Amino acid sequence: MVRVITVQDISQLLKKVTLKTFFLKLIDQLNSDYSRWGEFQKSPRHATHVPDGVIELMPISDKEYYSFKYVNGHPNNTRQNKQTVIATGQLALVESGYPVLISEMTVLTAIRTAATSAMVSRYLARKNAKTFGIIGCGAQSEFQVLAHHFALDIQEIYYFDTDPHAMEKFAANLKPYRLKMHPCTDGRSIVEKCDIVTTATAQKGRHKIVETDWVKKGCHLNKIGGDTPGKTELEASLLKKCKIVVELLEQTRVEGEIQQVKNSPVYAEIWELATGQKKGRESETEITLFDSVGFAIEDYSVLRLVHRLAEEHHVGHQLDMIPHTPDPKNLFGVIATSRS
Ligand code: NAD
Image (cartoon, rainbow, N blue to C red; front, side):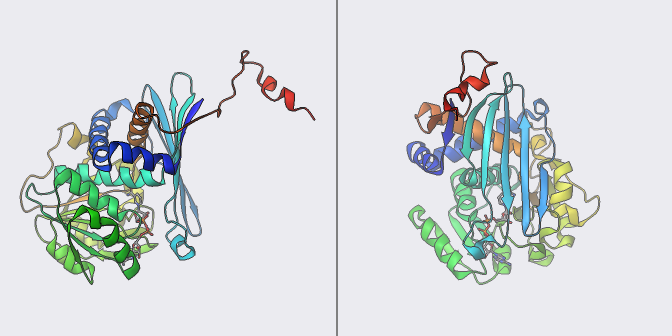
């Protein structure tokens, strides 16, 4: 039997453990998994580029577990009332190769991306950071805000989207959290005001969602929308001013903001911060950038956490996704009764 987790199951699990607890546990899990970087067999994800987007497979394993995620990125999908990013994933035992968990991962991707952003913000943002700005109020946006609210006690939010409906939805979803909310009319005012800025737009092509001159000293930028070849969010000259942290350099060179500048200097991979081999922020004035594209270890972390919590709280469905037969060589026996 394999535990199967649907979207409804994730919602039920989050109600049981609370979103805040889940985020905080996941940040701990991410930190601990990134700290044992050397124990993982890893590679850049496998990307299939299609006319309107990208479809990716993201595998990784350590000695005990193997995980992979199927995920897409289709920025024009919302025009047809479809989501930009959809994902499903699997966790399996390395010793036998048997799957133990199959899960929805659209919600989990938003949660793990936001948790990773908040974990890196803890290393790179100023300790006294109070204001958080977000450009792009789509599917990822509330998760980004709440991860920073829970992990860094951020209370004041500035937000902008070219789509007024997305801004209304964003404000309505966050109302129960009683944050100080400031709708803005452009990205510039957000970048000029905020201590931490997330860019989460979805458009193909090279864009200047953040321009170099707007960024004040001491700002931490968390860019998540520039995540495939030819799809970027920051003005290229800004990269020279930033201390840059990435997930897996080999993957980010191809997919992240740094694809814009050949051999752009990169300060660290996340694992170097998690192990303490490199310091995070070193002064109040430096500008820091997390050039996030999403890496498989983050999917591994969230699947491990969901697996553990789902067992503990009896969430999910045990389904016969693996044939069970007393004689392992008699696979045919499983279907033998359905002769025609
Ligand atoms: P979405 O389509 O739901 O939302 C994107 C929003 O950006 C939309 O509301 C759109 O109106 C807005 N937008 C577009 N251009 C804009 C502009 N110039 N200024 C302001 N707003 C603008 O997409 P989503 O699921 O929220 O994903 C956002 C981005 O994050 C995508 O590019 C996606 O590929 C990326 N992503 C990255 C990671 C990661 O790990 N780094 C994970 C998930 C998603």
